[in-house]
Amino acid sequence: MTNQLLSVTGLNVSFGNREVIHDLSFSVEHGDCLAIIGPNGAGKTVLLQALLNLIPYHGEIRWSEGTRLGYVPQKIAADRQLPLSAKDLLAAKVRFLKLPATELQSVSAELGLTDELMNTSMGALSGGQFQKVLIAFALLGRPNVLLFDEPTASLDELTEERVYELLQSLQKDRGMTILLVSHDLSIVYRNANMVMCLSKGKTCMGPPKEVLTPAMLQDLYASPPHYYQHVHEHEGERDAQIAQEHEK
Amino acid sequence: MSGQGLLFVLALFFSLAAGLVGCIALMKRMLLAGDVISHLALPGLGLAFAFKVSPLMGGAATLFLGTFLVWQLQKKTGLAIEAAIGVIFAASLAIGAAITPSEDLAQSLFGQLERLSLPGFILGLAAVVFVILSIFLLKDQLSLSIFSTDLAAATGVRIARLDLYFLLLFSLTVLVGLRFMGALLASALIIMPSATARQLTNKLPQFFLLAVVASLVSVAAGFLLNAFVFKFSTAGPTIAILSAALFSLSLLAKAA
Image (cartoon, rainbow over all chains, first blue to last red):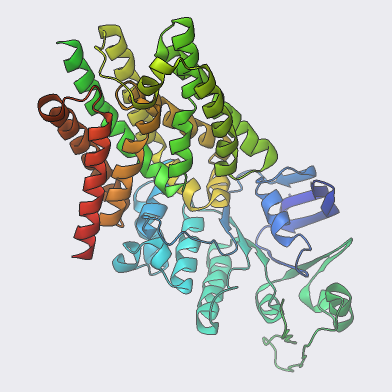
């Protein structure tokens, strides 16, 4: 029996005359954490949107049966004037999908969303709280695959750390499959077991150790990346850590 | 019940629909754009007067044609909704002004207190109940799409269809209001009560409730004031002024 969750064959996405994704093929296995990296404009967000069937595309995208997708988009410019509390937003999804009412309680308890936070309007939440609500939103409906688009782009380091701890626990404890777009290579190294790099016309895919080489990164980002790499001897520790200083 | 009585009852129901539609339009940031939609009825009213058919039919025809054009223009060209509505509006206002017989122009623009026939009442009531039920059933989808179209679409909401549906509900509400508010003021009750409610609360259920109450109070008090005090040929301006007064009060309440 195959363990394949997603297979993409010959994917092409264009906006007008501009081709953003050209002839992309790859597959993802159940339980993978696939990080999608690449320079701005390489089509990372577009790829997620195509996988979610939000935009028109050519080619084939096939999810295995029983796949339920959860999506955490890149930061949303929330209208600060919107009279919509976190609870209003989450409850709207619960009612629209006719989920059991208890789901809202269990997800908010799981993410530590307090009553006070739930009653705050979305526009008034801090970056970290806002992101937490978006993750809770994605988790409603018990998805088995999470698509994460730059989940920590606007967060401070401590909050960012919390988000990734949560992400790891979702993957390990629940066996969720995660597709993660990120600029932060150290994050990618720590969380992903597979990396796909998207760049104009070129793609590569493999385990981080094989893909995230200095030569490849230089090629991918065109300008020489600032990184450091150090090797640990101890078993269980990651063997290399690469941090990229300038992200955008 | 007399024709005037029927009109009053219909106006009360209309105020409920207008309050709810206004809340959604305010959150979608298309209140003023929506206001302009109501003027799309003008060429239809003009044609109806010119050809001596029911003004309501004429108004409905151009209103829904215009709404559909706005939706298409926005979808096909990616124009912002206010740009799409602006173009269609200016064209239809010009056509309306050119073809409406001048003696009927004021009535088209500001409405009149005509006697309402029973079939007219039932039709209007059915339309208003349809709008209220639709908003109630669609409120979750609408909330999701207002917050983020991407998130809503990923959740399974069909955005383009929802947009069209809401535009049609908006137009239907305006159409019912045309009778007593006229093409220029039909949307006053969509705009002002929601703006008033927005001053007073940050929570969604209260927002809807307060808008409906503000709308209901404006219509009831406006009709009565006009019938017993001002005795204008139409209650529209009185209702709109009362609605604006409630908005001013909400500013004071917020400041206090």
